[in-house]
Length: 189
Image 1 (cartoon, rainbow, N blue to C red):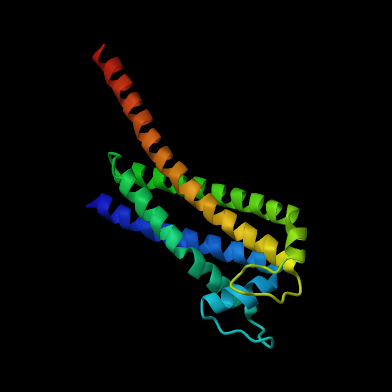
Image 2: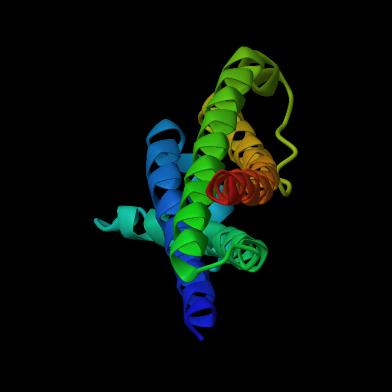
C-alpha cells in the first residue's frame, strides 16, 4: 500500500516539477522574445492578452504550466512505475526524485544548447518569413527564432531526460541487487 501512495506522490511531484520548469523556462524566454508569446503562445493556449496588461508575466507563467505539466505527468508516471522494482517505498521515492533531477537538468542543458543554435542561425530568420503558424510580421524575428528553437530543443531534452532517468532507475536496481548479493555472501562466510 505504501508503494501505491509513493507512486501517486511521484506522479504529483512530476506534475509540479514539470510545471515549475515550464514557468521558469517561459519567464526566461519571454525576456528574450515577448512576441513569441503575444503572437504565438498566448493564442495557442487561448489566453487573452492586450497591450495594456500589467500582469503579462502571469500569462507567461500560465503558458509555462500549460506547455509542460503533461511532460511532468508522463515522467512521474513512468519513473514511478519503473521504480516499483525497488524493494521499499523509500528507495522508490529517492531514486525517482534523482531521476527527475537528471531529466530536468538534461532538458535545461539541451534547451540552452537550442538557444545557442537559435542564436547562431538567427540571421536566417531575419531574411525569411517565419514558418510559425503563418506569423509573417515580427518586430524581432531573430529573437522569436531563438526562443522557438530553445523551446523545441527543451522538449527534445525532456524526452532524452526521461529515457536517461528510466535507465538510471533500472541501473540503480541492478547495482543494489549486486550489493545485496555481495552482503549475503559475506554474511554466509
